[in-house]
Image (tube, rainbow, N blue to C red):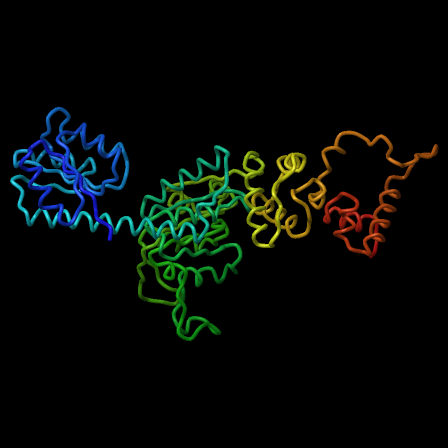
Length: 459
């Protein structure tokens, strides 16, 4: 059974011995007589609780408390003081002391305050362990990114997570990872063990958004559930609700959402009684909401209510240094999923990946790596594995081969006819399989389909 460790910091030898005798029955105790020795002791030994006298020789208790807090760690500090030093105790409490005891010490009071402090510490450690479990289960700590932009976004998300219900607005193109940042905020907050729900405001019929958000009472809709239905606001009680593509909300829904954000109460559709919930709202959008406000498509008052804390995630093409770390991360995950053993990415393939525009952002990169790991063979990803993206291999880029194997007649060539003939030949070799034909030609499948239509080639 674990025994808590307590450090007694007091220059009174008699009190040192008394406290050690009282506490050593239940706890491991260490004793020092000065603030300087206390800091040195904490650097050498893990301690759960510090009993710290305010009046110490040399470095006093307040200064010692500052040094203890600067060391970090989970230990709690209980100040010990005489009656005339109570004002100083108030100062110490503001600096982070957990509690205080007034001398002469009452044994019963001492034991109760120490037990409560250690119970508090135990609960705190259990919560942190549970949080670590959730972070691992939901893969939230595996946010990959080395660019200053993404590191700034993650650091800001950590700060926002420390607030209990601050509304957050996340802006960024489709596929940049807005939901990942939203989950980071949720799982690193005190709401981490409560629901995290998502409504995509652009994917739901605009007529049904309000019933999805606020729920509805029984008999409200023909064909609806007889007993009514809870909305996402109510289902997310205690947790977080992500409103994705918030710019797609119609004006009436914007009004109702604004009223909820101000009052924390809402009426279900068809209902006459208000419901109150305790949740954090995070809104995400692939549009610039400020421009949407100027264009008259989004309410200005709702924008300012959502924009309490804004996180902007740049597109992947603007944070090139994140591309290869992300590709390696996805490669490792898909190796495990598909039982493959790709061990890296060649230098030429890295060059191609890093310079590709990734219009679909992180989502497109993930899908590309998944396709390579599933479809290709080899110890590492090569340029030839990436031809479906329409990427030319580095060694072929910018120069003609020494012997292209094509004879140009004196009367000249018809490039369209030549391209058409090559496409037909590739389709013959691939038995009409468009994906394989595109790979043979070194172009992407969409490009091949476009050229099939352009040249009127029927399969």
